[in-house]
Length: 185
Image 1 (tube, one colour):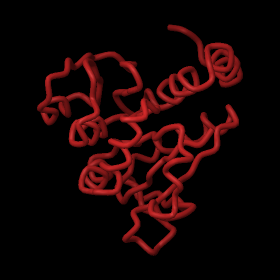
Image 2 (tube, rainbow, N blue to C red):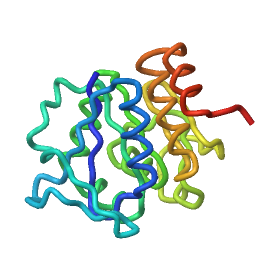
Image 3 (tube, rainbow, N blue to C red):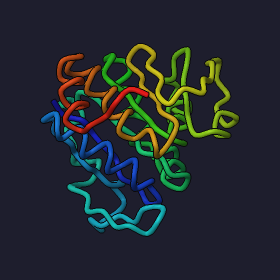
Image 4 (cartoon, rainbow, N blue to C red):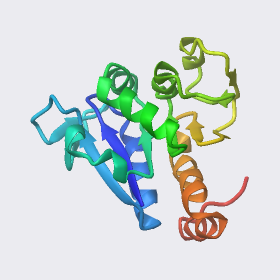
């Protein structure tokens, strides 16, 4: 399985690393790809933590993807939202009913691409930026057809676990959840 995790200037570090780490524990191949206009492999997050990307988005075989996971961070979200490549990838994956997921402010990007369905969650306050006929929920995570959204940094691991459940089933989800010592509250 291949999941694209775009990394843009100003990404939310906790969310990005939670996604990558948790999905890799489930043996999901993660492609950390930067903006195609950025020649620098190193990308600076919202809190000045630098993460090395693997390639440019233009170098990714989009047809080989099983889904995409967008980290948040307000600046990172704006860069995702303004990326024609990202919008086109989201639309293509949605037409193929493949997994689309976004956390924190990044459900705004899903709205921009026109792929949100009926319900979503996001970082509190960002829902006012989403001007489509969908219903905002205050849940930590929200699953709606092929779309998974989450509200922010504290939900990063839960978000990634929902991606695992969607792609690999409840057994793998429970295994990784148990290994990570996640307990129901």
